Length: 362
Ligand code: IPM
Ligand code: MG
Image (tube, rainbow, N blue to C red; front, side):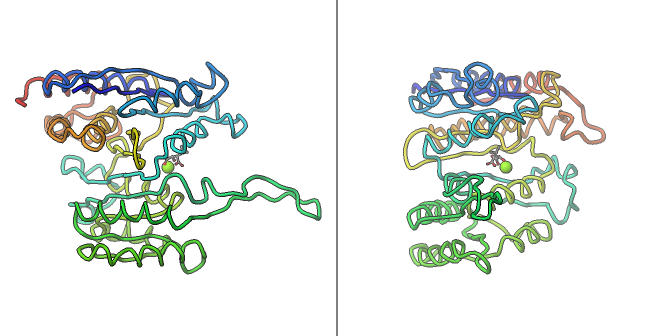
């Protein structure tokens, strides 16, 4: 099979971890007879420096003309004070909107090898396996009106709008129900229906849809309670479906349960066309270029890409197994280091991983 993959290394540690992902794809390609054609494009800060814009048109075009997009990370101190339309984050939001990526899947699964890296007690996090399904192209991130306007009295007023249409709720709800069906059969919808009209509407639509999925057990939580429950007893959750802003916040909290955000991949999918696969962590400008980055979330994002976009589950399994094996061998980057383990940099972690991948049978 031939696949065209657009690579968006971005900023900070992005290029270092992307190199590892490409090496992994080359090895896997050989083993599974998959031919990858790579095309690279700038996004975020590097794109601002090169073109003045965080998401150049050519970048979006290349992404559209590919089977899948692999993104590393964007942003850094250098671009933090630019006007909003020139910020790296605006490039990421433009990519999500431009490709229609309304469904963001963020797994938070505790790995037994890293259980001590969690800041919570072992008995609370052991066995945690949560999938956050976050709506990604609507809600308060994109609703209008937005901006800073002058009121009649001459005072300035900042405005964003949280809005969801029926079809926006229905399509993400469907992804939520179907994801739960493939997992533990439990879906928790998170909203703020006790205060927000848009949330009550969200809750009503999702409740209505639940009759189509009698095999899924649906529950609802207010977002403040959901945040509390996530750290109190995370094992009660299987699949969570929620809006853009609540999903942004809860997925970080869920990620931290696992001990290292440096281990978590994500997938952003649309109704059709290429999806974007990226680590949950950011560009970590404080350690960029120092060979300290953990490349494993990027590698696991490659596995998600193979599973969700390219329909190569065996290749995905193989990568995930190799990551576990490397951890079993005791190799750790600084972010997941614990006593008695062997601390390595990004490059050495990659070497060990590639050795494991190459030596194991298909
Ligand atoms: C994320 C990030 C982004 C978001 C930022 C960088 C725009 O926090 O992917 O969770 O808020 O969606
Ligand atoms: Mg976030």
